[in-house]
Length: 127
Image (cartoon, rainbow, N blue to C red; front, side, top):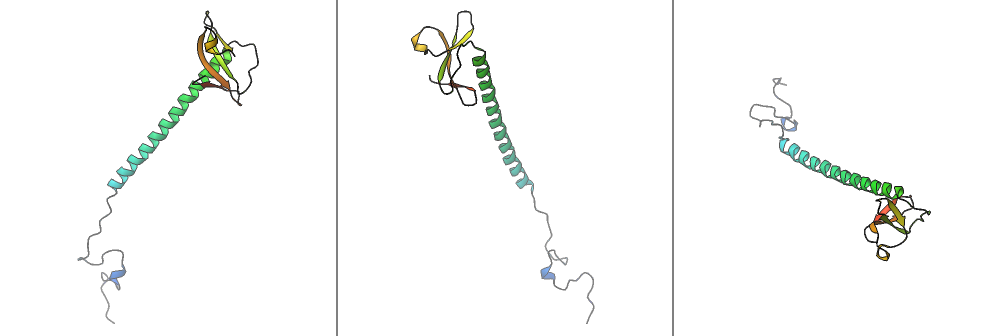
């Protein structure tokens, strides 16, 4: 058997690379386009998620402020969960909570609220 030179493969068609000078050049894939596309999509995802969290945070702060306002108002009764109460402002600018609806008297109406099962005041859009 004749000895082959070192640069000649036994089965060149099975090699994952070219085995002679005439073989096509091996070029790495250009992943720049793929990478920039994925970066853009990922950044859009994070931006959308951030905006969702920011919106939830703003709603939480708003609910906190309304709860703080209602709990600091004047009321001489123990509110029942699930009932609607109305927040008013007196002439001296203090706040009070009442069962009387806004159309039944002439007071400065602030808002309608309902006490939920977690003892949080939920501001109602329409009383």
